Image (cartoon, rainbow, N blue to C red; front, side, top):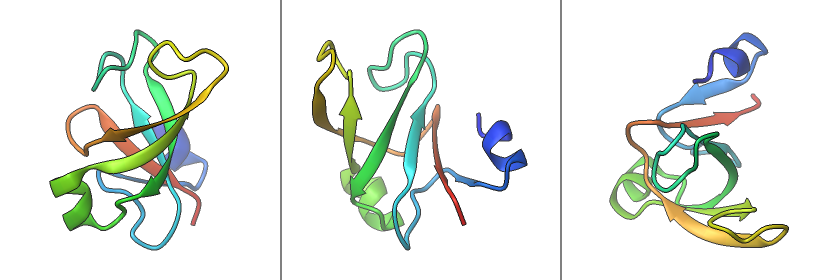
Amino acid sequence: MGWGAASSGWITSSEPNPNGPSIIVLQAYTQGAGAYGHVGVVESGVSATSANANGVNVSNMNWNGGWNQVSYWKFHPGAGVTFVWHP
């Protein structure tokens, strides 16, 4: 994942943006995501050390059965996870 974002000029990384906001992209069936995967907005935990140790706090729409609801969840960098942000 990330080739479309990268080809459009966005930065893609296995770690969240340490200098500001980023979007987390979960591949299908990664950390509870469904068959289509999931995206959310990283709210905190953006340093690499914090993200790896404690995860990142993410605001989500329609996560975990909460249709049409904003919820907050903690995800961790790792396999099937990409972070994207605009430079």
